[in-house]
Length: 444
Image (cartoon, rainbow, N blue to C red; front, side, top):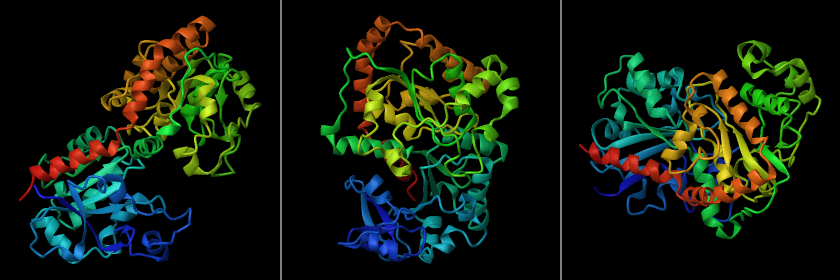
C-alpha cells in the first residue's frame, strides 16, 4: 500500500492548520515562521506532529486541493476536538463539524466511495457514553450516510472497544463495515510524557533503593470527586494523612461556590459504603487540615506534563503513589497523565480507578505490583467493595517496618526501571498500527 495522505485544507511554513474550523489569526500565527500564538486559550492541532510526522515511511502531509475527484489513494482528513465546545455540538444536525469547518465537498464523495477517512481525535477525553455515540452515529450515518468504518474515532477511553460493542448491541447496530464506526483507544497523555523523557534522557530520575523516604504515600488531587474524598478519608482513618504527601483543596478550584463540605455525598460515605467505617470525627479531622498544598502549582498544563520535573522531590521522598484517576464509578476506563507520571518518576503505584486499569496497563507492557500487595481489587466490579480493598492494602502498607520498606525498595527497582523504559514507547505507536491495518484491510 502506498503512503497514506494526511490531508489538510490549510498548510503553513511550520505545518498544517487544523481542519476543525476555519483559520483565525492564532491559527496562522501558529504555523508562520518567526511567530507564535501565545495564548493559553488556543490549542493548535498537533495530530500531524504527534501521530504521523515521524513515520514518513507510512504517511505524508498532503493538501486537500491535490486530491482528485475520483482519487483512489488512501487519505485521512483529521479533526481535533477542543475542550471549548460541548462534544455533541460537533455533531449537531446539518451544522456539525463538516459544515462548520467548510470541509471541501469532494472529500464527501471520496470518503463514501473511495479510500478516504474522517478521523475524530478526542484522545484527551474518554467520551464513550451512549449520548456521545448517539451523536456521532446520528450525524455521520443518519444525516450524511457515510459507511461508518470510514469514521475513525480516537478516544482516551482505554476500554472503548468493549463499550462500543455493548452500545451497538443495545442499539441493534449490525456488525458490518457500513454500520459500525472504527474505534481506537489512544491515551494521548501517555504520549506527552513519553516524548518528554525521550527528548531529555539526561533528566532520567535516580532511584536509590537504600534511601528511607520520609513519607509513605503521595496522592495528588485537584478536582473534587467522591472516590478521592473517600480515599483521603480512609487514609485519615488509618492515621496515614500526616505520614503522606497529599494535595487536597478546601474550595473547588474551578467553582468557588463549591467546597469540601457541600460536595460530600454523606449517604454514599456513611450508608452505601458503611464498610469503610468512616464517621463524622474522621471527616471533621480531615476537613480541619484543608487545604493541603504541596507545590502550589495552578497552571493545568504544567501539572499534567510536568516538563520541568519540579515535583520530583515528592516522588523521591515518598514510597508509593496513590493514583486517584479521573473516573472511578463510571464505565469509561481512563488512564490519564495521573497514571503515567509515577512511571516517569520511577515510583510504585496503586490505582484508584475503574476496574481493569491495572490489566490495561499490563496489556500496554507495564508491570504492576501484585508481588508486594494484593491487586485483585482491580477485578472488583462493585465500587464500594473495591474502595474497601484498596483502603485495606494501604492500611497494611502503613504497618510495614523500616526493614520491610527497604526490602521493598530493593526488590521493586527492576520493575520501576522496566516501566520507565516501556514508557519511552509512545502510545501513538499502537494507535498508528491499528489505523494502518484498518485502512489496508479495507481498500476499495
